[in-house]
Amino acid sequence: MTATATESRVLYTAKTHTTGGREGQSRSSDGRLDVKLSLPGTPGNGTNPEQLFAAGWSACFEGAIGRAARRMRITVPADLAIDTEVDLNLIDGEYSLAARMKISLPGLPRDVAQQLVDAAEKTCPYAKAIRGNIPAAFVLV
Image 1: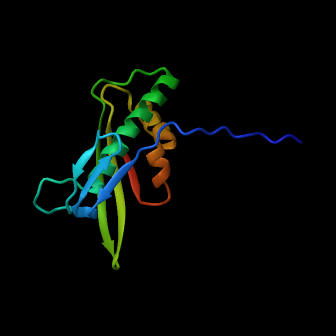
Image 2: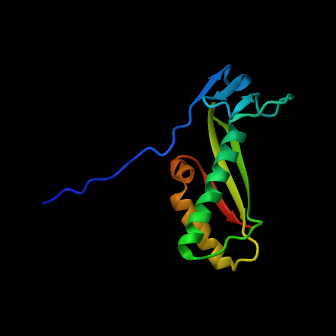
Image 3: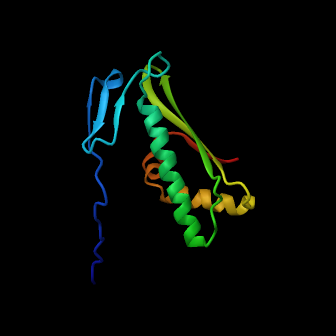
């Protein structure tokens, strides 16, 4: 019996340096990201981890839709849009997250658009990371 080897390679490693937690600063090693952080819902000009997660996840998900569309030989509408909401919850003294993603694929038949959303949910690394870990909804609008 012959064992099959699984090929794995790192495509990219993001590196950041963060100080001050939710009221601090985060910088990437290449200098492309340099953000001030602030608590959600407080005045100020900083972002927060939930916003950063929502932005990263929606960008990744849109890329996964594009990959699925290419495999299915479907043209993705130029006005594809994703609105992502990430909730920071406090339940019985413990913090948790929940999320909703609202995906707009105008001009595509609903069944085709749903196939793209379903394929992206299966392949997007962010969607895979949260699957079974936080409540998440993927809604085609």
